[in-house]
Length: 206
Image (tube, rainbow, N blue to C red):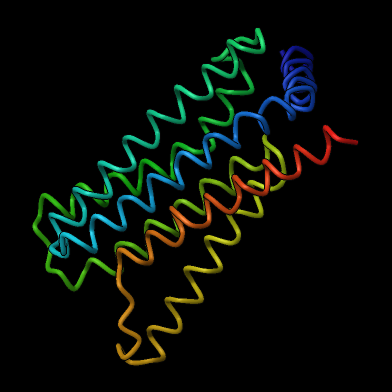
């Protein structure tokens, strides 16, 4: 039993190393798609003044659902294009790493919306979502290119830094939750997607 388990782990690690380039190619369009979606959602939230708990939660939970569905379709298309099985053992490990923090964020968001929490909880909820998302990326980074783990750290440290600044400012900082979400789920994703695109071009040129 132990020998079989060890062999399976070695095979998974070998497959992950072989597929690092495939994951990187799939990440670029996923990051650009998620970033554009995040910027669009933040813009809609600001223009339409979706500031209540129900409106804010509904907007961003819906955006997250579209982003997850889009990422799934993009990754599946990339696997088919490269003649690779989509739901392979390495893919399952990545999904298992992402699932707990993302599921926790979804449940907290749903409970907040259904309970019709006050508008004062909107900003803490946005911080919590960014923190959980950063934890999810960091966990997935053990099975994917190291840039994902660093991206997770950026989300965690950025959210913690802004949260501390808000607390120390005694509510004088006046952060807009939509801007916060747009920064982390929009602008940062676009920046990472652009970085992947540029470095891919440099590697291909070399």
